Image (cartoon, rainbow, N blue to C red):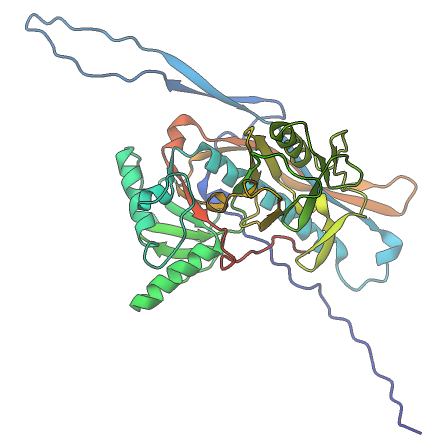
Length: 435
């Protein structure tokens, strides 16, 4: 008879480590509007509505007064976010880990990364200038394909555009270790990991170190006079060309979630083929803008846990995989945005070669920003609320916040949207899904 042994089972004394993206919005956001505001309140800012020019003064002292007018820009405090979990006391009664503290950190991370994604997307949408393939001799509006040959050109082009717009910046200001130090005027470059890698390759080829100093907020060091921040929450955009009506059974896939074009919708993920390609484009917009709602032309109510996809080693609802997505109708195409995502992988299978995702317009939006040029009003800093569950020995722990943001006219000049082509398979895809 073989020897038999009993082995002890030993649990670790803490949860596994989490790997959330580090938010950078405290460096680029101006928080002066936060105090004293409530949900629904409106923030207003005046601006001069016409330029003033110098005129010749006549010999008799006659001058020509110019009209002067003002206008205003506004934004309303409208964003309310929550992240919550229910902890049942009997289930954790004999637990040797601090469950409440652990999940509190997770809830906090989820909220702060959502704010970060919203702020970065506001910067993209409000940018006063862009750097695209056209600035390097290619096609204007297309994404730039990164290389060692062109990476050093990008900060130089950005500085030229800032100088051309008379933007005030501070070459002597450097990033510190405190998230809320005064970064007004700090030259920042917020980049996805793939851009940071290309910078490293460029410097290694020349034997010049960047001085990698990752401390907080993904700070990488200085390159081309810009303080560099590596961030996975940058916005991503693409264009789905749809000039020809799809054939029954054609598909498109976004971040692992597949949609079928069908003559009649029958299952979740089905998008009805309209009478014309433009009608079908309308249905695509409806599908992407309401992922948890079934309508006559679209079936995509992915909220019941039966329609799932694998991401980051986890099984999640398809609607959560596409968190932050929205679409805009262009009649013969659909423009798609996903906030807080970095690169998103897409594919399609269309009968017509005229349809599909445009490779040159699969873009991660890196950003050159002079510090404190996105106006962010956080009425309620993220905080945890404990809510006893009626009829249960349990508590809901709810992390919640109220905020909103805007890029005003004068701030737009201090932001440049850098369009990076991410269509190549060599441009790695990462995930922000962590637990």
